[in-house]
Structures are given as structure tokens and as C-alpha cells.
Image (tube, rainbow, N blue to C red; front, side, top):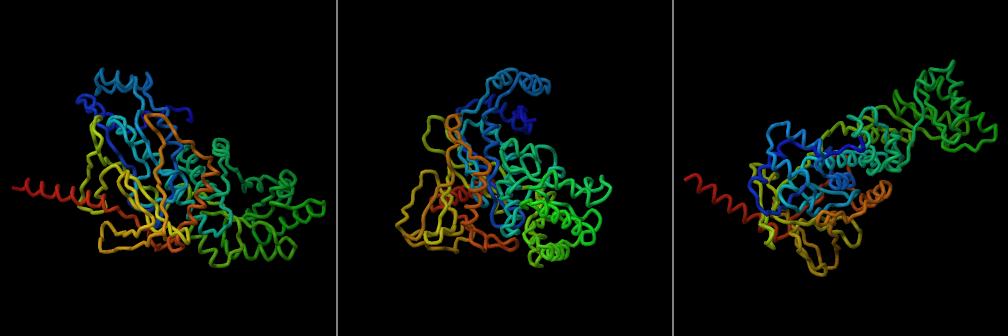
Length: 490
């Protein structure tokens, strides 16, 4: 699967439009923006993920002889277009927000500047990759926030929607903050920690629970997490685990990485009772791990109840983002020009829903930080090439409710441009960090959010504003379209 050519991982209409452009040739260069409109799970932010796989996809973009033969057999493509596809490769520019960055609605996560046929073909696969990994990275980030510093292990492979969702979902979960994954292939591919204990079947395959625990402890003395709920947590599982720990200690073993896992029942009650029993036996530093259909809301509730759990295995609800199974990213045309022209002509998509009206033009994004706290004040979408003097006051305003304004005093803020070059003239100019490095980036990024924006429910949204130039451009285009619509009605 890893070696599969993904060029035909596209919707048919991308190819039919490409043939239409081919049959009506032009030297048109276009700007497409990939962005999303609403944060997942009712949160106030998302986590950028999947860029490394987008890079791999674009690098390998080519139509093999088998691809061309298949398209020919469909009976809808002409030979001259099929011949063009034989030599196809990407020649444009790509800008993107680096992985691990916290991002917000309506701002371009990826910007494509390329000949129209090339930019059109990228749409489906790019959205497939970015939508999935951003979704799972964001979900994992929320789960890690709820755990308040406890380790989160990703356990979702068997419940993921297919092998690729399991592999790259685990990658995204690591970016979002997990400390390890049960997915061995993800561990191999991305050099991330792999973790796990044993199943109930291990216990059931022995004559009794104690023998199963004892055998496992001999095999893995430095990672001895015993699953205690196969029969009875408090009457059997914990006493047998304590017996094994006592024997290990009596044999002179330096107990580390040891403890128990509870996979069913009332996790708050059982963990508190288990903690009392372990402490009474002198094992107050034992890990108490829990699994069993966890998500950020249940973990938050268990924390509020005083559960004595300090390690969490999260599977189904994280790898599928069960409460919000789609990210909703879109890919929209924003500007066009002929190859000999210097300036792009802005394009806008209208909608009766004001939130679905696109932002036109060739754009970039500046993140505005409070200089004193390092926290995000707002993101500013502006036209590429716009510059700002941080020694001067800046007025920000809501692009939909324009009477809402904020004044930033000169010298009180700093700026960072978010979009960075990824491809230039078809060549990759960006080196992706390792997954664990991206995870560290994400941790630092989340520290720039105000606490009010990290809340699991009813968080304070981060402002995403438009520069004056971009706002005026958008307003002028809307006025122009409105006048044309009135003329059509005559």
C-alpha cells in the first residue's frame, strides 16, 4: 500500500475538467486555497497535519501506462489528452502552514499557485490527506488536554476505517500529543514510540490469573502493566497483581514502568479502590492505566471525580473522531492571471450563507502575538506582499460584524507569517520535521492559546480578521457582483 501510485486518487470531474482546459488551451495561472470553515468537535482551534504526505503525493504525481490505459477504457478521454497525461508532472508553487501549528477557520492551510490543470488535479487527494490528519490531530489534542498532563496512548488501529486511516490516524494522533501508539507499522514508518500491554485472552489462556501475571512479569519486567479486569478487579485482579509485584521486589528487581490497566466497569470507583490497595501494599508509584471507549469528555469527567488514573489508552473515539467524523476542508479558486501578467485578478464565490463567501486574491496570513504574554491575539489574512509596521497601532475588525474592533498599540504585539514555501517551480524546497519534532511544535503552539480557547465546551474563538486591503477588495467584488445580478433581472 505504501508503494501505491496515488495519481488516480481523485474524483472523475477533476480529470474531465482537465480535458476541458486542455481542449481550450490558455496559459492561465491560478491560486487555489485549501481551508476549513468550522472547528471540529465545537472547539476553538484545529491542528495542522498531513503536509508530509501531501509532499510525497505531489512528488510522485505521474500517470503510469496502466493509468492511461484505464482512462482510455472509460471512453471519455481523447488520445491527445491521454498523451499529454503521459508526461504530466507538477510545475507550480505550494505554500502551507507547517504541521503542528494551531489553525483557525477560513485561513488558507495550503495555497497552490500553478497552471490551472495542475492545480485542479491536486484538489481531491490534498483534501483527503489534510482533512483526515487535521481531524485526528485535533481530536488527539483535545484528549491530551483533558488528561491534564497524563500520558495518552493511541490504541485505535483495530477500529480505524481501514489500514491507511489506522496508519496515518496514529501519525496524526502523535502530532496531537499522544506519547505512543499500539500501531507497530506507524512506529516503524515514522519512528514514534510503540506501546501496549496484553489482552484478556492472555489471562484466559492460563490455568489461573496469577500464573498469567507471573509469566508476563518474567517476560517484561521493565514494562509490566497487568490487565486486572478479566475476572474481578478488586477481588482477583488487584490482589494477584500485588502478589506478583511483591515477588518481583523480593527478587531484588527495581520496579519501573509497572502497574495495572482497567478496561471496564466504573473507572473512577475502581481506580480509587485500586490505588488504595496498591498504596497499602507499598506500591504507591504504580501506574494505573485505563481504557474502555474513552474520549476527552469522559476523561474530563473522570478527572473531576478524582479518579486515580494516570495513564490512558484511547482507541475508537480518537482514531475515528467519533463525535465529529469529518473535518470539512474545501478547496476554492481565489485568483487567476495569464502567464505574462504580474498581478492576479481576484475571484470570489458567492453564497446565501455569508460564512461560505470566499476570500479572494493571492493571500498570506500573519499571526499576531501579544508581546508580553506570547499568546495569540488574532490571525490576519491579507494580500501577499502586504507589510505592517509593528511599532504602529493596528486596528483589527471582524470581517462579518465590522463594528467589532480591537486596537493593538504599537510595540505591544509581534507578527509571524504562517504560510511557508513548500514547492517552488515544481521542486520541493521544504524538509519535513520528524513526527516527534512536530509533536513538540504542537505542544509549544498550544501554549500560545489562551486558556479560554482550550475549553472543551463553549470555548472563546480566536479572531481571524481581514486586512483593510483584502476587505476592500472583497467588498468591491461583492458590490460588482450585486450590480450584475440586478442587471440580469431587468
